[in-house]
Length: 282
Image (cartoon, rainbow, N blue to C red; front, side, top):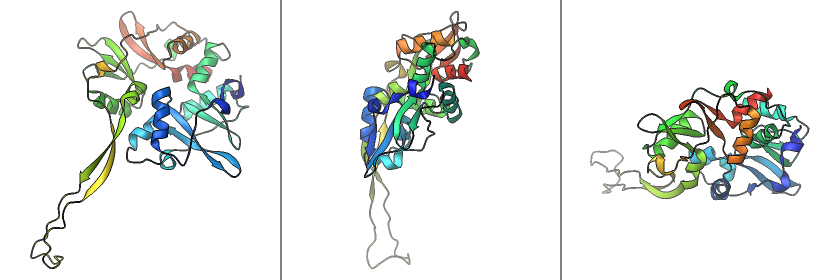
């Protein structure tokens, strides 16, 4: 199967245009649960692809409003590349969405598109997920403030945290999508402080004793501080190590999820992320 068969064509791809603002992107990330959005610019020669903006780009750059400063370059592919090739590219570049570009944006292929190819038997899915799962599971306590959990997820460099109760057992799962859904940008001001001149200071000018306070505008991404338990999903889909990549891919698509805890009996022993399924194609 090649990229042309798996990708979302340009006619169905949601994009934002330059010039534009962060609010244009935030709308799509919140309302449609996208992880990133391609950026294009209309020119005399037609539409040109310029880059990609992700959830992390917005959260990590709260003071930046212009799309041109928020977007970043990412690897691209072409329609004739194989699904296996683009899966390897996603793993190597640690990206979830790869623009399909040949002079202009022709579409986009995502991790979900590759997972769908596995689910439908168009790509190898016979590997047991026990061989693909990661034994390292990112976790947090159910009473952790959401704002703290967001920082923990960011530094763990994963899009989720399995939530644990007081007994250390799995209580639910929190994802980046859950966080971005309730995040918003707030405006404010910071006091730069007063500057008082001393009579003996060489730089004192006439009788002016105070330069006064200055204020600079600020913008911050505000995330609620309520406990994670209020935002997590507590009805968690789990999987055993003997399920195949194809079976788990079908499970992910049916439940619209990107990661599934791996369990052995009642014990949490790993995590199967959608990107782990791509390893079956290498």
